[in-house]
Image (cartoon, each protein chain N blue to C red):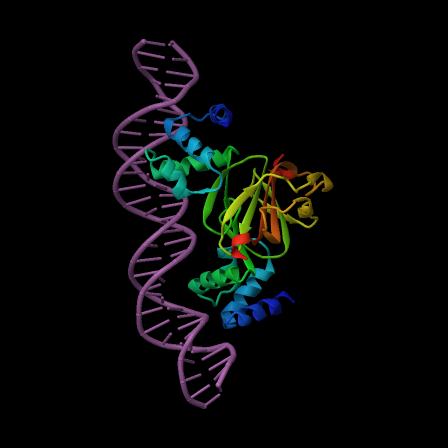
Length: 130
Length: 130
DNA sequence: CATATAAATGAAAAAAATTTTCATCTGGAA
DNA sequence: TTCCAGATGAAAATTTTTTTCATTTATATG
């Protein structure tokens, strides 16, 4: 389970595993690219400041990634790869699984850059908006 | 030139081409993924509110894209494709040209989604941070 | 070329988002 | 258990973004 990996990482890096941090982790794991508001809604008992701080910590540990695709800040589990479909008409963001990225074809991209993950955003118009 | 295409689009959509908008467009064109602060620095004569409104307009017209890769909101020309290398150590963002994405391999991604552009973020560790 | 007018601008104020401060509390090592 | 560095929460401060409204201006039209 991803939760155990996360709590292990937190402890390994000298931080405490608190109920608040667990609550935020569970909230994040519940759904990808949630807004601050959605995450907060999933941990009613946790103060706003703590949510901010926890997300900062998780991002620093490489467990969570913060990104804004035009509709405000959103957070997602920092999985190896991640693919979004973004409609420029209605702003909806959906995910897809099949990976159309082949980084092997990049000969020494960036001169010694060590790749760990990637995120692809495909922009266009969804079927509803056409 | 991209400026002419942009001003044409602005006029075509019933908006006015003002000196302020031209200044913001030139600022944006000067460099990719700039922060609000940097853009404002490049158009000293333009009020902050106008910069915000202009960026909103340009985003709405599909000329500019707003995105946040973890270090605050940034803006970039909405080119067809765009590839970033993001170091999780120091947060540096650099660009690369060669496109490792092949969307043809996605059979009808998202059921009728019409693709217009894409943006790829590759996360990892830069040579300096290793 | 003049002018009418809808749209655009800027300054100030308001609202929203995020961070800091500081007193209190607690996970987990010893 | 006890201890204490690290974590939390409430309030305040700061930063970022949006709204309001009086004034100005690009541009379509006569």
